[in-house]
Image (cartoon, rainbow, N blue to C red):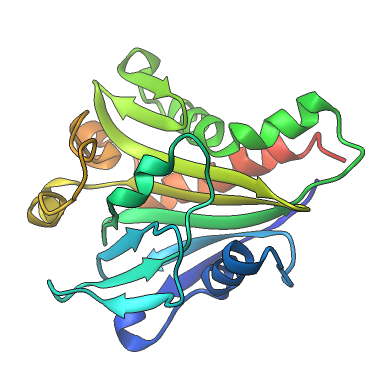
Length: 223
C-alpha cells in the first residue's frame, strides 16, 4: 500500500490547523471522513495541549494558561479514563496524524499491521539510527527509553477508516515546566524524556526521514 506522507504546519495561535486534524474532528463526531488515505507530520511552532473529551463541539480553543488546545472526541472503550486528562504536543516534538482506509478483504494479519504501525515504525527507525535496543521498551503503544516515555500513539478504527495520532518527544528539558502542568493520575507515571537529548545520535531531520521510510516499509505488504 502506497500512502501520501507529508509535513504540514501546525500553529493554532495563528489559525493554522492541519486539514487532517479538521477532518479527524468531523470523523470522530460523525463517523464521516471525506479525505484521502494519508499521514501528516506536523511542523511544530508552539506547544499545544491535546484534549480527548467524550464529546466536543469546539476543535480549537485557548486554555487559561495561554496555550492553545485541540479537542477531538475520544474514540475508545475500556480506556475511557483517558478523557480525564490532557497530553502535550511540545514544540520539540513530532506529532503525526493519519487516516488509512480499511480494506474489507484484508486478512486478520493485515489488519493487525495497523494496530502496531507507529510503535513498530518508530522502534525500527531508532534501531536503524543506532539506538541501543536494550534501552528501548515497547509497552502497548508507548515506547520508553530507560523506563521513561518519549512516544505514545492512539490508533482506532471506526467504519471504513483507521485513525492514527502519535506524539514523539525529541527534547523534554526545554519544556519541562509545561510538562509539569499535565493533568491526570497517569500523566507522570513513567517519567518523560526526549529521545534526541537521551541519545544524541541523530537530528530531527534524520529521524523524520528514517521514520517515513519505516512507516512505508510496514505498509508496503498491504494490498
